[in-house]
Length: 144
Image (spheres, rainbow, N blue to C red):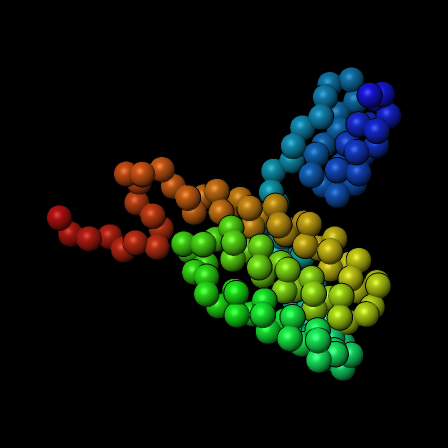
């Protein structure tokens, strides 16, 4: 395999802010910037609302049935205990709503924002699954 496809992939990752390219030194994975995550969620919240509004105007009965099935599958999961599956079904549901909205720009922008926020969501998952013996953040302190 030539270096060109790898170089192009690294340039795309750099454009998205996932890696930093340092000439004649190397490529480094960037830290998650919570300010940027916050900004992405602010925009994503508004665009997801628009996608829902458009989807509600354009949805077919078959598409509504598909969303109901996805919603039922999500409701059976616990965000804490089934975190990975919960995130996956949430993503599928929102992606389907975006598709039903029928607006290609909206779909593209939301997918780009989703890529930016998913890195943070995956980091939370990693932090949530603590090694045994360590106290989980959802468990209250108890007197001994």
